[in-house]
Length: 283
Length: 283
Image (cartoon, rainbow over all chains, first blue to last red; front, side):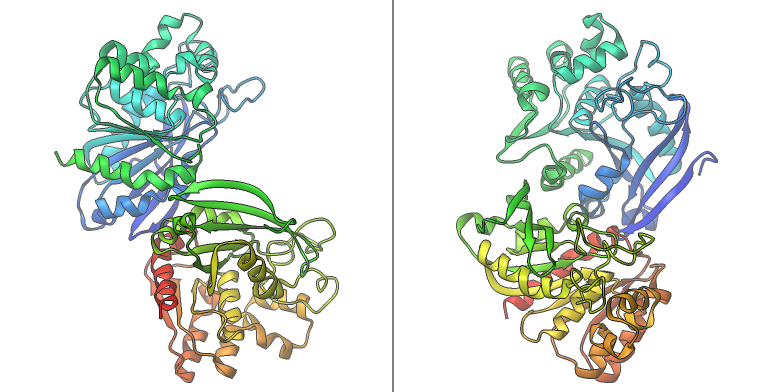
């Protein structure tokens, strides 16, 4: 194990191990905490593929770890789960002046900020796509097979990251993703601070724009609760459905009747998402 | 729905509903919050049996609701879950002078206190065995079939309540229960405050004592993590194993290797517990 990796907690779960680590991130210039689930197959020396989970606004690595019930399925299918934090943290890391929940701490949006004071630490894209996978693949009994999933802001992260990195992820899924951030208040606020006022620079961080301009075909599954109060203002699911239709992009985008934006929704369908990733790992 | 029952939250989960209510408790003399999971079978008019879940020290109705992953199994088996709080709450309800986690708020121990200032509000036994089931059975689409389960202090509650009420519960299960509270620091502290100094009065609230003195046979399953740091000082699992052996009481008490006292342990085995209850509902 790299010297810089500090084990914070360790729990037996479904005959595997749920572990939480802290390390010093070179790309974010701060200490970062992440969680890993290692399924029982790794107890006997097997290497397993990895599903990365990106969480939504205000979350840390703990929300998905404790609430989604994903470890049971990962144990059954033989998948490792890697759950990073949602932004840089700690001394010297800037936050929104009013400590708003949708900018700064807990709101990294999985992009590389170009504007001061954000650009030194808010480079979550590099952290998730480069630094973290290298660390994971050097440290844990995993293969180089990767998939990516996430919720809300993390659903935006999972989809954009997969689309921007052809071949790196076998599949991508999302719950309630922000699919057109250049056109919604959450995205406009974050991108104007992190990326500046030139909206042209925003487009490469927007799922609907990426599908429209240069779709990299990979298996995509999206679940969206029909009773999610953020659909019309923030998530803009219909914009992505239109773009996929226009471009004949084969994403499977499903409305789930009566479900909202909560972890109860994620828990209800995480089994289908992990089975989706598992299917494409084996192709 | 009774006028006094206020709906606080409602989430679609596994095609059923996770709901949280507040009501004015007559037995506890304070407002109480509880959670209910209604499985999809109830959407189409079916009545289902109820599993009561009693939580441990410091918990509310939310820990089990969000962390155990029980709704998936309840949906599959057609069981309602009822998850009460762990003590009376609110204005006028006394707490430990030093706000200790193991006395007062969050630490009701599922007994009827006899000593001032506790005896007006700390009558969780009456609440769980009388007031709450009446409310549940009048309000929700459930049968009069009941089972009971719990964790740690709630495991103590589940076992003592089932043993003290022959015929009311089809089965009882527990995770990491405090099985001999008259002999451990948590129990000695709580019982001396709630019940007074005469230890004879404590015995009817102690699982090991109940098994020893007047075992009421019902199906019992207990899971205990082998790496639980509270075993030797607080849980005293071996004392119950000895009493069951002496009395030839057929409880199934299992050590689970490597598991601790956390909700990851509960999540790992809750499916087996709900299947255990389901089996006895159908006999």
